[in-house]
Length: 227
Image (cartoon, rainbow, N blue to C red):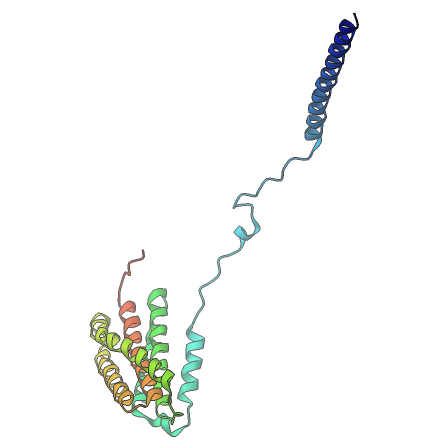
């Protein structure tokens, strides 16, 4: 009899707990459903057309002409005796000519920008030629490595000079091919004489001339391929 009563009590206790858990589960579902329905919607990301930055006008391409002309005037105003150097004057004359060519080709933005780049490269060469004439400090091992690295690259660049000159079809370009080669040879001689600072500057000047010829070749291309 007692066993029967305890079995009944145990069964009723389990059923009561199951009922409580069932009601609790459904009550929880109803509570969170109501909370979700009352919560504000998630903010949606704006489409590209709605973003403020999409409405900004496109920035104009920077005009390099004023800066190039200012640099030309500054270098032409050099009053040091070294400024009478024939190579320096020759390079500056060509830089001036390239600026004039750029002004007459403003309708072609690609050609215009390449001619200004060529002018700046010629001025780079002129600046290095002047610096190479000045006395330099005692060279060390680091100067030797730097000069050797510049001259190695210059050797291959000079070999490209004729190719660029042929494409540019500029009547004056051949004389600058010869000048690039001459500066490289002088740089090699300076390196052999352990004048590493001078060698580096002359190699850099030669490379700058070839870079100018490359820009001129690009400017002469009527319809450059864009990949």
